[in-house]
Image (tube, rainbow, N blue to C red):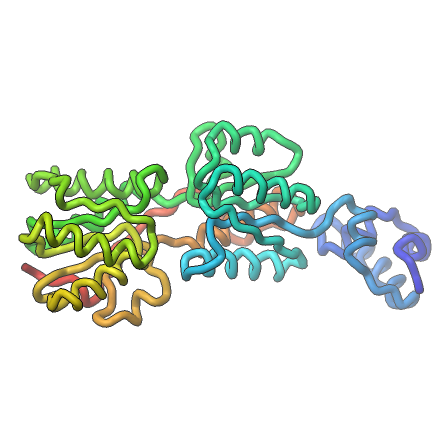
Length: 333
């Protein structure tokens, strides 16, 4: 069986050049690429991951950390990153941190131990200082859904404060003044920013924020159901409920029906994320589009460009602005 060293000799080029050809590197001239490909064909050489790694000091694998392995939000992220990298001959190693500092650090160390060429992290529990130290290390790192000022060139994030603002403003524009809010876990920056935007929209409209109209959920469907029940008891005049993600909005819709409330004639509900199932709920869910797929795509292209010298056809952008998606769960009061 032919080896990469024999291909190198037959083509009259270095091992690194052979590796660049196998990796699709754009810096190789067409003449050199043809010489290498002809030598590979003549020798019947079949490249393998180990040989490529030895020749290029690359594993052609990228580590991806997500908070959870279930749910439409993280499913969309994992699928998008894998598709972009796979199209360019790279593989993805996926692990989960479960929003726990120790487990996130263990997961990141695992990815580094697998000799991943770069890391794409959706990290929520580790500190900014820890992430900054990672970015300063040897392995290139990018962050999704998190902005850290000192390393913002490595961050891909949505404006969550604006997202929370436009969700509540859409409700206010329909005449609602008694508005409940189910937040995500408030130790998370995205959840606290969305609540901040909600409060800003209320203040602009001259509506007093009430603690009784707030329930802190955990981004899962069950907490949306619990939040709906709890707020209804403490804030019975509520005519609209804004939820910090679509899963909780789905749970809130279930609780509303169980309480005999018609949606949206008796209770309007707005979510956040615009995951796939939001358009198939009944009624279809009004929500805020959180472009996690676009963020994942940009992060993957950043890795391809900065680590593998594979340029993106579209400019890399870091900040994403959310948009309201109006469907059938929002009506005038």
